[in-house]
Length: 624
Image 1 (spheres, rainbow, N blue to C red):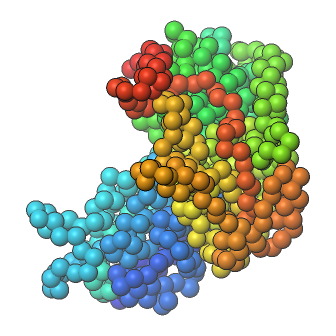
Image 2 (cartoon, rainbow, N blue to C red; image 1 turned 30 degrees about the horizontal axis):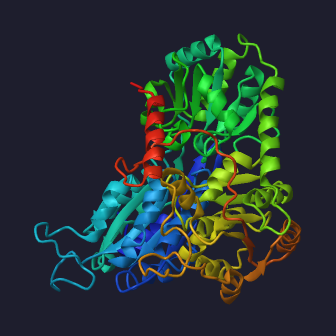
Image 3 (cartoon, helix red, strand yellow; image 1 turned 45 degrees about the horizontal axis):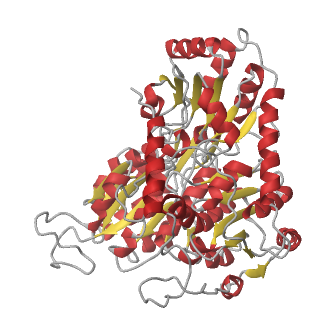
């Protein structure tokens, strides 16, 4: 091939052709980096990207979501299942179509998950004057709504000339596949430029494989971390999402088992260890288990592996109370590795844990798991006693999770995000061997669950179950990707826990003020001021059936077991609606969470609650 050979393509055709030639490789395994594209088409992209897909997208399957935000969540689900080695591209029209992807972009970047966003933009040539759906800024003439993507993208570029792709596309792919930098990557495509042509080098479209590195740890960093672990009397390991992304589950289990160190999991790290592992003690933090909180309180050395250490994990910096506690931050991202004044190990989790195992295991003897298991068993007995519903009452959330846990096996995925579901899983879920968990709680984004489950299903293929657990509030916010699952013949099992509103937030308000306002699904009350009348009934099963799914109800645990079994046998998507008690959350972890409270209140009960809340702020620690 002559390096001077060219092919004349529009900008959109070049994007589509180039994406099909990109591959990622890690540990000798190669796969398509962008295996498909999701798109909702309007005048801003139907004659650009859509035409290019029709002409040049022979190896780029097109998926048709029902909402632009949802397609970003689907890309995140696929990226999570691929361990960040592949993701989808997402195309939207200008104006509201583009901005509908903003929430998904924030969710992706916060969770360090790669997605490629191709929002359409206004005209670059400006011959038309101001155009449909253009924001006219009084000062910045070149500002468009797509500039909103800048602060939530790990890489952003606006394509104003076709030849800019020669540098923009490789830069975008590098960031997408860099484990330390990944997140939402945005290439804003002017509507007119999408159709403009350029003589691109033929060589630009040759297959290209991007090696995804496992950054090695510096020897000095490893030795400093190893020395801390050797001296530790009450060490603790916090397993975050980085354990999953680096495929470090096996070495983490071996490392913790040989050294006798208990392991707690963050939301993103849930499922890093099987539930029957002797040193696994469940989720940590505000949503976690009480036994994990007790271990964190007394830990003198904390090895944080692949975690961002958010406030829900650290109890707003209150959970670690040992006066001389020291942290080891093992993370591919240097900023995360240095948090809470940690001794950093900036490296791939799998390889760094392997190196630490060699340095520490021969020196430090393993502790017996029995004392640890006593605390875990006591917590599980408390849970088992608490979740049982009284005869004639609705089932509790805990009973739903217990029944689901009894049915999930190897190859199955369970997906959850906002509301009570992430906390319930951290407290109660015991990951069956060979199964997988995806909890999105970095952004706590309602509406993430169903499309993310669809993305996971597209990655995993037909084997195993993909079970999505959501509340009724989330269902009402974004149920329409059920249609996409039906359309694509991609089976999901969706559990809708109906407790008549946003009860997790209702509980939060009740606990801190003594009342709840606007958090339940109710008719407007007699005063006319608030929605505080009777509960508004919604037939979620009928709604699901109207979108092509099988819609059923389960009022008891026995009925739920039967419906889960039937759903597993079906080829179709099933939505199981379970009315649950609205006043039976799982036991509290006891961990403090700092949030804005009304420091002045006329209600005496609210004032007392706020005063007790303020007292707990004294537990917060400062880290440098």
